[in-house]
Amino acid sequence: MWGGRFAEKTAASVEAFTASIHFDCRLYRHDIAGSRAHAAMLARQGLISDQERDQIIAGLNEIEGEIERGEFIFRPELEDIHMNIEKALAQRIGPAGEKLHTARSRNDQVALDLRLYLREECRRLLGLLGGLRGAFVALARRYRHTVMPGYTHLQRAQPVLVAHHMLAYYEMFGRDKQRLHDCLKRINVLPLGAAALAGTGLPIDREFVARELDFPEVSANSMDTVADRDFVVEFVGAAALIQVHLSRLAEELVLWTSEEFSFVTLPDAFCTGSSIMPQKKNPDIPELVRGKSGRVIGHLMALLTLLKGLPMTYNRDLQEDKEPVFDTVDTVSASLALMAELLAGMRFNEERLAAGLGRGCMTATDLADYLVKKQIPFRQAHAIVGRAVAYALEQGRDIAELTLAELQGFAPAIDEDVFAVLSIEGSVNSRNSLGGTGGARVEEALARAEREI
Image (tube, rainbow, N blue to C red; front, side, top):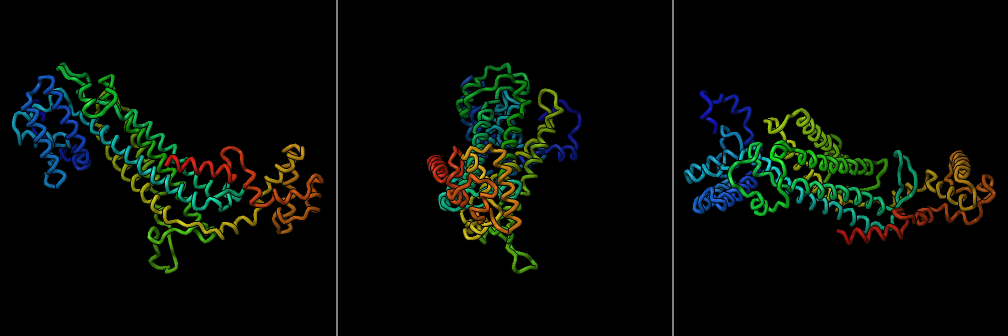
């Protein structure tokens, strides 16, 4: 493709080192879609004839079909998907195929392919996020009256509804959805027409190509266009957050399935056994999802490092952006789909959850709130309840098991009505502040989530 400038043939070792066709071949549909639109524009502007345009598009369609059927032979010496398709086209249709590269460079061509690819994958990931969020909503509805221990510092803290816990993840992955939507705005900008770095002196119509490819915007600066990989970093950053959130969920599932917790039972189809211990049922899917978060975070770091030292405009270093992106898409997609399936078959062990509520003085905060309502300053109330908790623990009892006389020994203002406050049910139902775990609030949040889903 550049033989006119060089006196020597490219070394085979260089061809092998610089080739990207073994991974960027997955961009074939996007490359061909961009070439069809480009050919249509060239004909519209009189840079090629209508007949040549039709030959180009027919040839591209034929090549696309062969690739999809596994019949197309990719040639590593042609380096990348762009030159493999262009060379094959020229061999099939002759000089018309050699006109396709008019007014474009591989620099703006690859930027186009990557944007088309990420636009498609963003939309697919949004669908997978919707499926995962739907699984949380289904669990919240099924267990909307079930109470479980809530934790801070992995210590029992306050009782919460299972539905409230599931809807916490619904909100978390909702922000991931928003980030992908926002990322799409910057992905969805047409780069084609920037050429190598300075634009072109030929009379092209970038707005026409943008309409053909459904881009709402056209890039504003040709140098920035071919140098830009911000949109790639932003996408992988959003994807890394999705994987981190999946990892946090996975960690809870690993804990909850242990004998020590036994809060949930995972479907057998999503677990594995041991090669030596017949009794084992291992939560391998959550563990692998948790492990793969490091992989995606690593891709984000790789891309940031790749960009940090690059001068304007295109540099061959940018070839290294695709493998991290492709693997990020594959990893996050598989993780989202598997976790949604796993959650659909997961069951909470309600008896075990109830047993976990019986110790730990989990309604201590409710007693402090009760004293505040008796006009005792909160810091004083906190100290009073702290002493009551210490006493209860010394007795091997829960604070809710203390007698009225014992409680009044710490605060004479305490009356018979305190026991409604100290019950698990009373504690949960009292949390009716906006966003709280109170039954009425959770029902509102669940109804809203069901409307959104």
